[in-house]
Amino acid sequence: MIMQKMKKVEIITEGSNLEMLKRLLDKIDIQGYTIFHNLEGMGSHGFHEGHLLFNEEDALVMLMSVVEPQKAEDIALGLEPFLQKHSGAIFLTDTIRAKAKKN
Image (cartoon, rainbow, N blue to C red):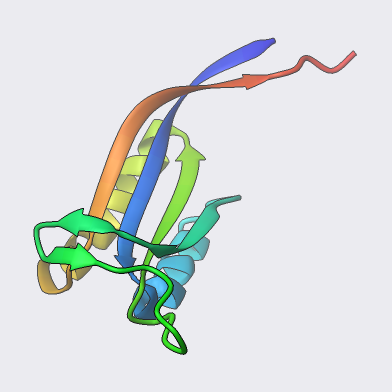
């Protein structure tokens, strides 16, 4: 196995911001991410209910990616102006990507 130190980036925001997040990640050449829709939970803005009928833009989403440490910093800096004006959170966690060696 090949082990590589990486950063896991988790961004939680309202669904209406999802397209903007995807454009930001495309701009800084992020190769892959996973999107979780209709999150439910308690935060500093109160309780958010998932599975809102007919309105996915008001429900919370989480976009998760695993990137090189410098890319994680680029994402956080790129989101700073957005997070100053909108509700949301970004979490950066140290992680290790394990990749099988190719024969």
